[in-house]
Amino acid sequence: MLVPNKTVSINESCIYRASLLLAKLEGDSSVEELYCNQKKLFIDMADFIDVLDLLFILGKVILDEENGVIKHA
Image (tube, rainbow, N blue to C red; front, side):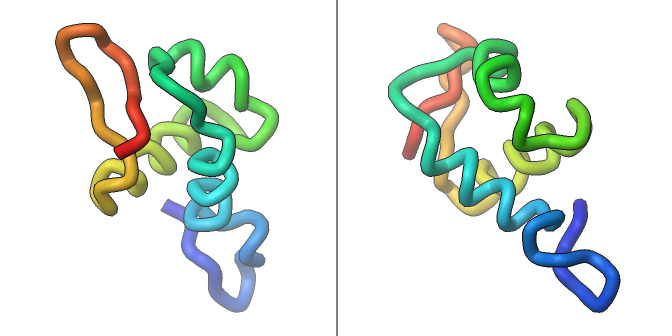
């Protein structure tokens, strides 16, 4: 997970990308759909997963396991 420091700018950090994704999260979306719609924000799929992990840990998103969708908490 990229965090801001001397060599990693805030714009390259996971925290910044998490804020951008959270702002664009509308309604319920599957993980695949969310990635396809917002993949320009991320370096690759691993970066996207890091952002989702961070948002989940912070309690900002929840995963509805029955429907397989991400919801804004």
